[in-house]
Length: 566
Image (tube, rainbow, N blue to C red; front, side, top):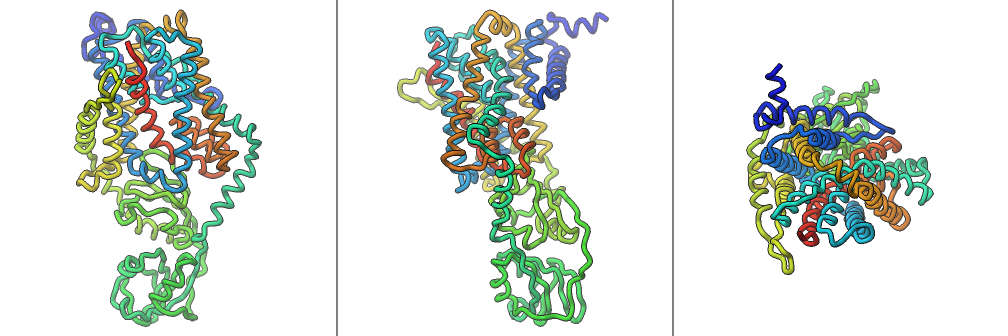
């Protein structure tokens, strides 16, 4: 048994076996415990932090340089994969519908910071150089944002160059559990403050969706009389018209068939077209007159099928769901959109990108047409683009290391290991194809790398903080971090949620999604989805999530570099 004792021994903590065993135990136990739900809420992978703290407190640790390397590398990997995830929709989120939501999210983030400073001046000793950094850790626990904690930690090392006798992870750990509960509790409070009726909110969402002017289908039998069409394939005609329509039947030489995109039209052919009502007149003018026919499409009902379709056709890239007219033209419904592991609301203004997965429900024949149009060739997406990831990380680290001199600031500002890779990843995710870089990664690959990075970061932070954590909580200001963190969580939500409802008249479920996205908190989104009959909360979440994540990381460094001094 000596070999087993040696592996766990602190004297052997610099061995590869000890370090790998340490991280394996901390991460595995943390992930498993994080799945336990209390009151329907679980802490998820964040529980790795608390297991790491427990390991560090009993001296089950590793060499500090190794812990620091894995902490920073995990953070880089985590924020870079988040950047690739949110990049494609980052700039589109500022569209007409999303601008107000993003402004409200930005004001919420600002209020979080203002409440933090108010608590700092009211409850803490401002002469103690550790008080404000500890409140920054509390802030990011209160808003459940782990990347911000990493960015703040990194910035602290550039300010406190001679070392620190405190660890902001303690403040984060104290505030985090009530942060998760407080976000959900505060959104429930808004419901009663604004006297919201959930049934009425659901009905309004259904009515708004039904008012889509492009949703009404129009069916017409046409005779091909345009000489330009003769000898051309259906695919060419569709591209030239640049309007969505489906040709469901073709009568050619007295033979009735179901046409494909490769079918060639000839003068005198009779066709059955389904289009949105608003496009019917233009399509008829281009193809030929509407006619009466002695043949009709089979009346036999087709069984409904549900199929997940992958968008691999580059022609669809950038198109909105409303422009494609799934319901009116193709006779199907898109019930879910999955992008890099995020479930997005299938709203009319959603903009598709290659790699999106859509859940389509409808008659089998119609679903097959949609699959053909969308590409649905998963093999195109299988090849991993490892080079792009590490090129982006390399450029991100260089970009984050650029010193930015600001007057009256003790040290030059740097975006650092969190901000630099995040910004570069967002830009690559949106514009990478223009410089020949394939930035798409499969959902599973993105989630794997992201969760692996987060787990390494949390485990490292927890193990390093473990030695002094209990002294900080029990003998220090642990209780203060708990209740000030709770104030930081709920006050901005109550203010902004009420304003969004009373002044801007946003639907309550959209507000819930917006607040969950502002706090980058999936449990809050999950709760909102559980009480909403539609997918409306996801539209608020996905609209503000990219900017919120960026601002959380960026502001962590700004606060440390501008206001924290040794």
